[in-house]
Image 1 (cartoon, rainbow, N blue to C red):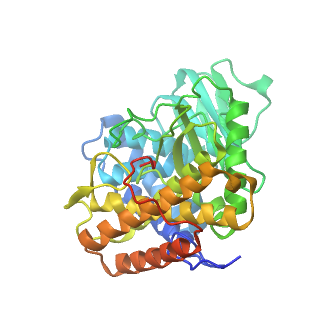
Image 2 (cartoon, rainbow, N blue to C red):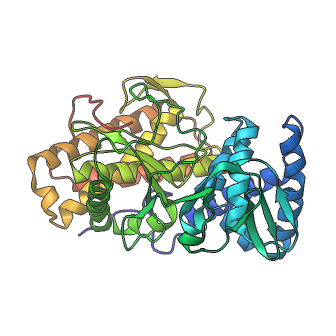
Length: 418
């Protein structure tokens, strides 16, 4: 099997830490944004609750910075804070989601902190559970002795795992996170979602990303996604090695027999939304595609890759609507690794790669990538980082075309997921 050339944030070389460094820097952006967030414009209750949290977090960032960075790795913390940083969602809701999840993740603190706002639910990601409180808990208290929910006449320690029989009647425990693959210890199928932007939709053929198993049971979702992940493991071993750190949650948003829809958000890295599909290869492509979006979206928090990213629009090689040039780059950056997946499966003689449908799909993806790269050559004005990214994508695409047994399809197609 011929080795493919590496490509930045697409096909890593052994030992490449580019993704990890990028993610760590974005987490630090989120930390800094929460630490410096003004209480101006917030409700009086939230304006009182926020400064003590900021003070305690600033002290902890000096004494145990790795603990704080790890806590901001939780999607329940990182997504709302990045939505706050981008201005994509109201501050009040972002902070009300993120801060309790952060405090639950941190657990005991040297200083005493009181988050005195009603809590109908508390995400306790460390223990993979959601605590539902009816009526809402009055506050969340942290100190050297631990973290406690104030239930009004009773309290519950949340940085421990109490016996279910000992839970107060006001608290119900949900466990909405299901493991999908033994080699991916952090990845879960999530039937809970704290992303405040989940119902914002840029795709013209979708209406948001509401949680929906699509009439299929959880076991079928798990089996289907496991089969898809196995295809990725076999077909993209170098890319797979990075996946445990690049994807933490897959959120189900329905079922379609004939087509597949998926989504991700710049403000919600490590999370992907996808519909169930009967074909494992289609799901595998979606996992690769949306994880690639995470990588490029993370980079966009640190530096621009295109000078005209959102100021110039063009026809898309993969969608029926006009797209900004950055949208085309996102598509190409997502689907060149999909083409590498096809290559890997074919080179290893995987049964999935022995069908006429697979051969058709392989040609179709290569053709879509060629059209996308042609648009970028004509339209894109890359920065220095963008020029490197594009050059390495071009090199990888050329190697994949050269390795294909048949030419890419010549006719335009909008069959690729956007």
